[in-house]
Length: 108
Image (cartoon, rainbow, N blue to C red; front, side):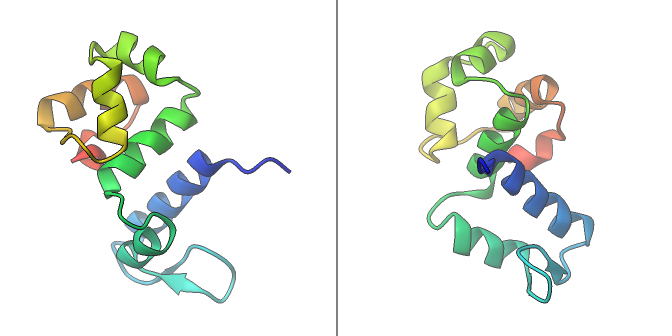
């Protein structure tokens, strides 16, 4: 079975954020984790915003180039944002959220 990392990211984020930050089962029955623990374990050294951006882009089945064309943000900037080398910022977050059908606060 093909692993869909984008969906795994989104499921983990949604499960924990939907629980109000309390411990919630994310990985397997009987195991629970906080959002911070989830990210530190699976995405060490990456920001939540960068991981969320990549996950939502995968969910929408878009390449970085397609997202750049739809959002008006240069592809090189999207690449840097996904790798945590460039802050997303509120205005860019709003543009990305509109294209990705998401709440812009996920990218801040």
